[in-house]
Image 1 (spheres, rainbow, N blue to C red):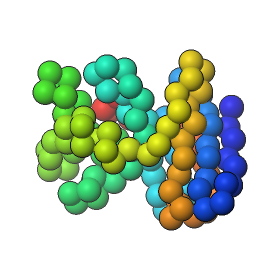
Image 2: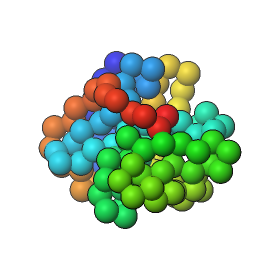
Image 3: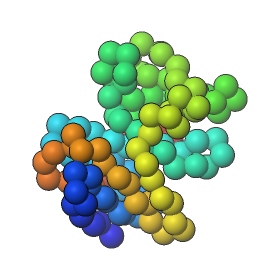
Length: 116
């Protein structure tokens, strides 16, 4: 299931997170990250520290951190929640509200995500 609707300046995308885990919109990339409590977050795939591929990072479940693969910068889950995109999770779908700056065609796909 893939839906991309324009609502004013926001874009709404609904998909099944069991099938898809990555969203491309223009030059922006987002990935589905599952926390230790199995909460789904949709995060920017660029590390805020140096732009590394955050979706290829590692999860430290005990410390509740996501580590960037480039410089091992660790991001606590509370930080990730604050910077995640707004989502609504249902048993078979995840609805994401993309920011107004996400311009371009929406592509939802499955790709390698090591941290979740």
